[in-house]
Length: 220
Image (cartoon, rainbow, N blue to C red; front, side, top):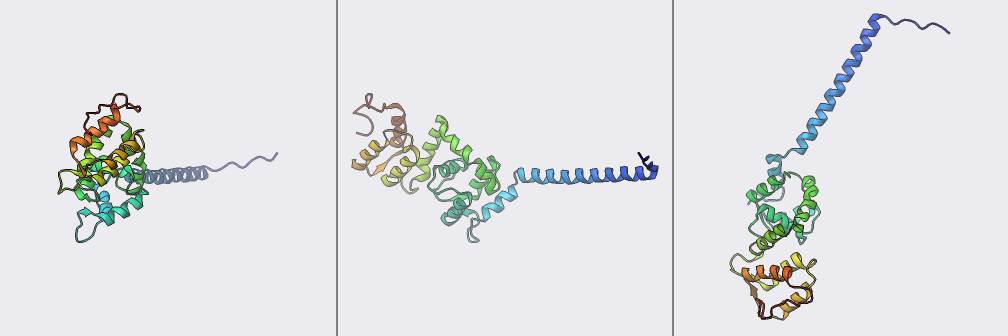
């Protein structure tokens, strides 16, 4: 077996230097990648505001209106009528349906650390899960009344009320279809806030067979 040639000290030193330089380059590249990931993950008010501006107009840069809302919903992949949009509005404490102000946007998305479409899409399941908490659901339900009603009126018109009740209770309250039928046949043209809150309590306390229903209750 031939004897291998012995490497010179100079060759070994050069190879060691090359390996060290290569390792240092890899570490530097890795650090830059980590830095970019951390930058993408951290919340940026500047980025969040720039995102908001994508949905506003030069005439009113601080208000996202119906047209912008439609594009926003399309971008995040959610129908405007989806209940998750109501939960998002609740997180922003938006005052008017179909509109987000700059302050509302920055408050709500800032709390959720969302400054991009992808980050908000990632949080949609979190927003939906809030509806499973009875106390949070109650707060969202109460919020929905003032959010959806015509601000020029003290009460909510019946058509709006039925649409919001369908959104909030339609899938979860076994008696909803009967109650909706009752509203259709009733004399009510509007629903005030006390009645609105009573409907939720009614849905939570009345048995499905109506055996504990008080005929002298609020909706008779």
